[in-house]
Amino acid sequence: MERSFFCHEQVYQMHASYDALVMVKVAHDAGADVMNNPIEFFCYEWGGQTSVFFECLRRIFGEYQSDWEQNEYLEEEVHLNIPLPQLRDFHALLSEEESARSIKKFNQLLNHSCDHFEMEMKGSVIGHSLRVTLTNMYGVQSSFLKRIVAIKNEVLAVIRERRERIINNFRNIVLLKSVWDKLEEPLIASLSDSTNDVFANVMTSLKSNLSEEEIRSLCFEDMLEQIQESCYQGENKIMEKDEAA
Image (cartoon, rainbow, N blue to C red; front, top):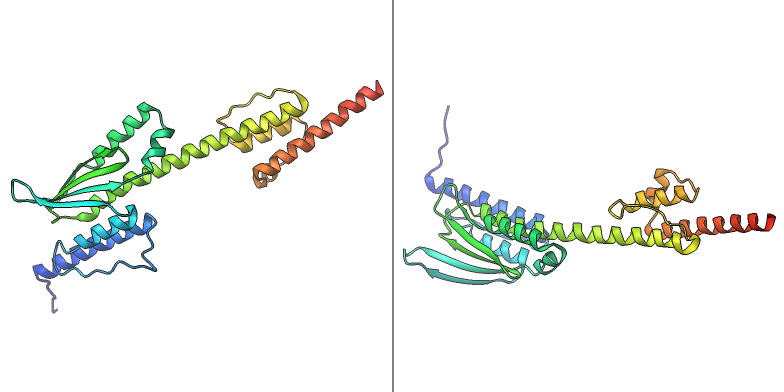
């Protein structure tokens, strides 16, 4: 049977092209529109995917600062200052201990060496940006991009989770206060419980039974209306008892 062989150059082209494709996928998953505004590339050799690395970086983080030079060992280095303004909200929503623990983890992510070539990354979180130095761009560059993007993804995830927690706690306070304002009856509930659970407990206390499906279908404004209506009915019952007495 006839066999087909690839020369070294063709193998390097395929490796580099695959690496570039992975980076485009990382950019897509990070929210970059690579469908309507594609990142075009053709890698003639290993290392030809470098332009894709920096284009993906720009698509994901916006404009960044870069400075190219040769170090004392005549190795090519690029120093990057990658903006991550979301770190401002990230620190504001965490305790000092939590922030310090997260920054330590991020700094570890920013220090990485290619498993197959001599490409190396060193970096740290400084203020509201990532300071990164890449030495030798001859390597599997998608592994470096993934680590940088992982930091942004975690920052955004923590911000989203903490904001949702604050909103949840605030809504629980409003629900409980609405009952107190109407009936002056304190209800015991944990603010960390879901708003649906707190609302269900409130309605049970007000002798108004709603199914779990009905509760899940209500938005927060509808919950307030339900509580006000139940409180109004409760007030009427109290007045009727007083009149009868």
